[in-house]
Image 1 (cartoon, rainbow, N blue to C red):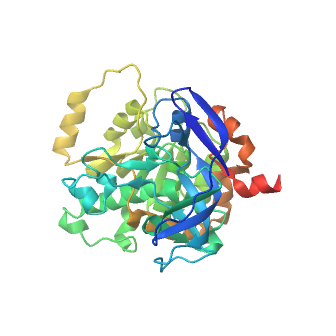
Image 2 (image 1 turned 90 degrees about the vertical axis):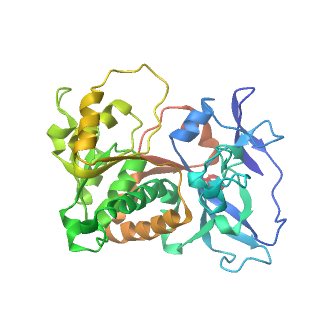
Image 3 (image 1 turned 30 degrees about the horizontal axis):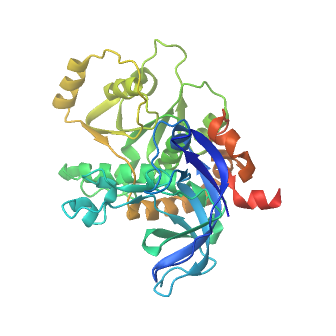
Length: 374
């Protein structure tokens, strides 16, 4: 079968032929991969910034944002059937008995760093025609979400961030009882830094929860992203010139979700936080020149205003389940939004352009169905 792989030592990215996998354990499921989303992580791996092949292999099959169709199930599988659509989790636990997060089923909080991740670190990914994996890492997607299911994994980033923010909120008794359905949610305001796929999916989820949302991006409107933001009832803001600060544009908010990886912008945004509020970092800045910042003011505000900075990476099973529910809401309330977020689906032969070239659009998808139709 065909697969797209990166060879770190020879610094190559190419289409290869590999043996089709077979079910070897009762709890395993075999998938025919339908869609694989391409993101910045894939591009960075293809630029040889990181990416680790499995032990004994000189290549790593790419792809961690997936949607597949079940073609076979092991005899021990009960809740997944042939014909189901599923998304598969990315991270797997480390082997160390002393790692309490991994032993508790939360490898997204792995304390040793020896976790593995499909398509990223130590495990082959999903950019191949067939995949076999354990059913416990799979989540069934309703057939009605066929077009949007590939967005599940990138949305889990926001879902985990929101869940962690809710846990932090509970330390304040007057917020402990607030749920997404509570009237008090209407009084909350949030800002998204960045209008890429991760940022826009986060904005969709916040709007689905009824939270007033601002999306900050440097590209001036009108554009496809600003139209999507307006469609869902959020506010798209962009600086008219470099002298305008984040606070000038949005005022002060209760929650900021950073999805840019631009540290200078992220720390400037702290000034827009209200007292008792939260800033979540999800981006990973590249190596570059350091810039001076007024750390005294930042620290003073964090202390005197009881503010919290939270870093989050990867996601747990609950975040996947929540993402699937939210995508169903998006499809029902804003069907045009999915067509905007997914720029296009391309056949597998287009992998070089998407992974190594400059791309346009919000989320590009390599589709094995598109390849079969080409």
